[in-house]
Image (cartoon, rainbow, N blue to C red; front, top):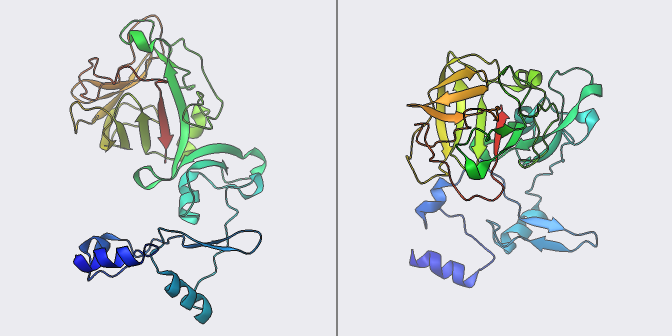
Length: 289
């Protein structure tokens, strides 16, 4: 380890990739590409300080021709080059970052393609944002006046908050993609929230996108709350005010009725007020993959 410290001291631009010196380097994925070199419009070259190769090694490779030319992909960058969804984009362009892209879930003419937000980092990426919501009375969370808003155009005859069919373009753009399109994007769903834990779920006998009650296979993606680490939902139920996910009891309840119930966001899955409190701009998001 002393050798590693010495190398860093005398070559600050270089993070030497030699596994014999550090066991930490063994964890690096050999398939990952790292950006090491850039050029501005005037032709000046810039080395990234986090480059994994020393500058002399980079120069040698350029001179000897030991490099690869990479063409940037147009997929998802325009209506005419739409991806099917964010998962398709991630497959075709692994380096794609999170942001807004053009998608065309029906794989037909691009005339009905539209822009959508892709999360390309969380749990492997490939997630298409289908709903961003906030609350009607977050500060009085358990009051009957509190509900999620807006809500998707799913079946919920007892709900009365605003229905949206506008594609959300960010996690704080409170809208919901036309619910009929969700199932054309995928079956897995990811729930992110700044007042409850993030979870990713696959269908069992139940399905969110098909509005079918039954079992789910969920995993914890990010622990937002300090309470009840590890609890995850096990099933989905269709209520007249909106669907809810159950663990021991309610974990997420997407209550769309401002006249009864309340929108549970309980990391313990006990239908209690264990949501994170005092959050500025409280919200949640559902992604499909």
